[in-house]
Length: 222
Image (tube, rainbow, N blue to C red; front, side, top):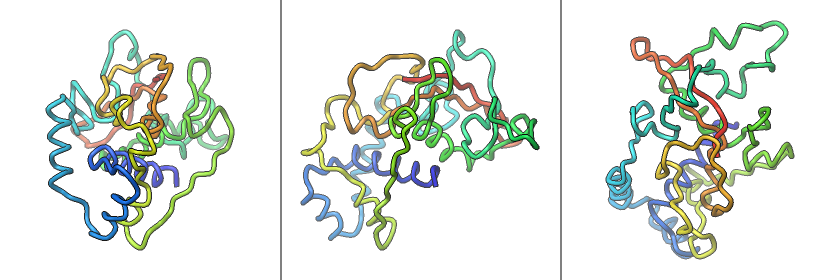
């Protein structure tokens, strides 16, 4: 469920930044048309790329939804289980599976939802590791997904109009930000930006020969 919701959250933020619905009437018009304007979305993707954004998870300069490699911080990669909340890792190992973390690998096609969930549902992780805004320092949130008759309707129901939320305080999509996010303190942010707030700095370390990922650099983020 955490991964499924994380993908919905990502898609809704991406669509809000691409389509910029001004008010509820715009969202209702979308529902009436029953399709997204793909030319508008493609133009947004081109705009992102012009600003240096890469949508490649393994781009050397701007890995998508990750923090770029920094020698001073990224000293020793950790088992990929650190981004999968369903697996034991660190001190949270299961009594019958102590070495699970070192044995686990993820396929390229499986890693993106886990990468999103690692930030959206992060809990306190020791000194310097802040919980996500969703976790709210250990309080248990209710996460609600309003489902439509199909995927299109569900995504429309998740859109927030720009007239009610500040889109322009800062670039909303975390993919538009400078990728070096480790230990940066952000004193103020927009409601919109909070929806994908990167409280962890993560960089996947793929094994290209096997199309798997067994390690990742992992530390505190914003």
